[in-house]
Length: 99
Image (cartoon, rainbow, N blue to C red; front, side, top):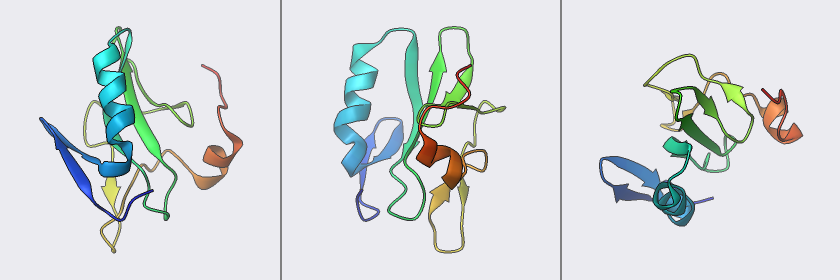
């Protein structure tokens, strides 16, 4: 978790604490690629939105399907980003709904 410090990874901005993981995932290639991420900054669960070679999009940590192609995150009143489909309960259980 970081304190809202971000690293510019063209064309997107990622949290500094996720820089190595996201850079590795992008460099590794393969059938699953990250398209968005947020560490949660201690307020929300860490989320990594991925897309497979078929165009399916889901949140990797909760395995929750995301039914849109962009604008994955919403911003709360304090300026923290979260995904509405990913709840605290589902995140704490780990990989559920193995789809």
